Structures are given as C-alpha cells and as structure tokens.
Length: 220
Image 1 (cartoon, rainbow, N blue to C red):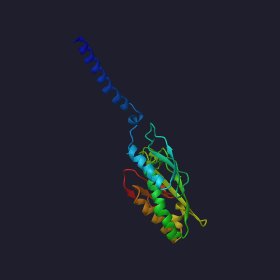
Image 2: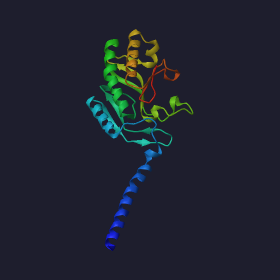
Image 3: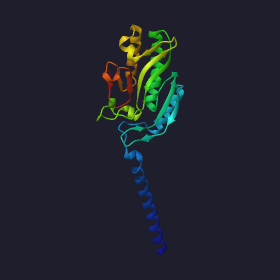
Image 4: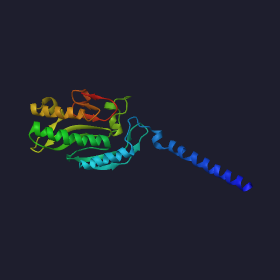
C-alpha cells in the first residue's frame, strides 16, 4: 500500500511539472514581447508562398525573422532580386507582398509595356521595401508598412530600347503612351495590393508608386 501511494504521488508530480512548464516558456518568447500589428502568414502559408515564388521563377533569398523594440519587424520575408526581370534595391519583403509583386510584374508590367510602349521592360527599379520608420517619416505617426517589410516603392522601368520611364517625370510630363502605361500598371497594382499611392495621392509620393498589403484599403 505504501509503495502504491509513493508511485501515485510521483505520477502526479510528473504530470504537474509537464503541464506547467511549456506554456510559461511560450509566453516569455520575444514575439509575445513585441506583438505584430499587421497579421503575418502562418508557417504553412509561408511555405506555400515560397512554392508559388518558385513556380513563378522568382530569384530570392530567405530573411531571418526579427522583431525590434520600436515596433518594426521582419517576419516570413524574402529578398527578391528578379521576377521575370531584375528588380533593384529591394530589401526584406513579406512573402505575400513579394508574391503579389512578382505577379504584378509578370501580368501587368511586362504586358502593358508591350501594349503602350512597344518595347519590353528589362528592369524594374524600386526605392526599396523594408525601412524601420513611421508613415511618411512623420514624428508621432504609426509605424509604416515599410517597417513591417510589407511595402515596396516603385520608381522606374528600364526598356529594351534604352528608354527609362520614371514615375517622377513620366506620371505628369511623359507622352501619352508613357502616361497610359503608368496608369495601367497603377490600376493593376490596386487589384493586388491593399494600399497603392501614386503621385496623385499626396505630396510624399511624387517620385514613386507605393504598394503595400496592410489592413487599410486605399487606391489613389
């Protein structure tokens, strides 16, 4: 009888120890200390997204997950170097945003260039993606989607015939075909991204088109 009591107590002690340790470790992790405001894909979604990038022929490198005390974060991100054509100056970009960027280039940019410009796009230029800052770098503003590796700024397109179509010059001062091309790719971006801001949007976007997958909905 004494042996049975000893074994019962020992079993209860083991079960109590196992049930109490694991949740405590999860609560003390770095992710819980710095929650992410914009939802990030699950691990399963991330692997599925990487598979889609591979199917699309995107060249990329994986980026380690990181969180920062000031609210910025990099989760489930890649650094793209090309998607059908080279892409310049990109840093970390959450995989869904990278996927939509690749589809946008393949489905909208390359096709629209042939229709409106009569020459293929051979390079897409950007002002980058990840940047740990507030919206439009204003003091006291919310963290930008750039601060979550969830946005990209498109600045120019290089053509096979030697032309370079910039947002800064082409949006307002380009010829009719250049303007039609830029507005065509802008409207196509609005169908793939949550927020798209052109030079018509505000004073902060006169030389690029901003595209992000944040929780807001805006296209102007």
